[in-house]
Length: 351
Ligand SMILES: [Zn+2]
Image (cartoon, rainbow, N blue to C red):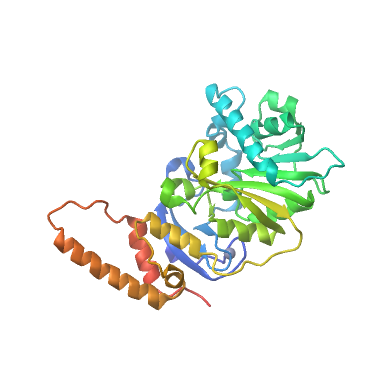
């Protein structure tokens, strides 16, 4: 009921206890996995991801994703129910694959193989098959009859090196332990092979404005580019390209509500570096209409500096309010602004 009254047991991605609360939000019934309807968004200062607190239990996750409720929520992924939307998705997938291709260095000695992890009705696989790839799908839910005919299906990630590229679209935001899944995928990917992952875009929240899409009952881990880089790095992947720039928006036909990233399997485990949570905090602040000052880098990491800037801004705002008392406000500060202000006025937790 009151998530911040419970202590989170470390970051689900990197186990760090250097966490700070970023937001509290109410979950809509259609994305409610767990009993609780109010969740906190916790940010991890070590790896930079943000995650729901409390996280759903394994039983709650199993129950939700095996239920018909989930299946019914994915009509756009089903062969026979989509009508015109399916045509549009096929066209978009083709464009994405063509934008991806120049960044891939593939072996010439074999036909490249792609796995779509959570392939739905296989539009990505269709696009790759049209371009000469061998295609493999993994889909725990229902798949259309046509998908099963067109592509080889597997029930689980193979244990041996099999793939040159693995697609994780609408996957990592749903996983409680994304690194564990990425490590299994790394073992099934050739050295130098790739992951193409796409997650809701916390980094560009101020532009697309879809807060309840980035964090909700089913999207339990939220990513900026820094956070996604950390998660992929912990599983031995290095980001080689991200595709949420305006060019991609234009080709893809929508604002970057998703963050698509291409990463290469370089082996080993790369520890997160720098201040990876700063991007999430800056994004939430911008979303709340709180533009950072030029000295923003310092402001995000030095609590005293943050407090000073806050005081100055507060004073300036007060003066502005008094001056414009008779005019209606352009945009009232929302709950994120209020929470961000409170959080940033406090020193970061932990060591
Ligand atoms: Zn972490």
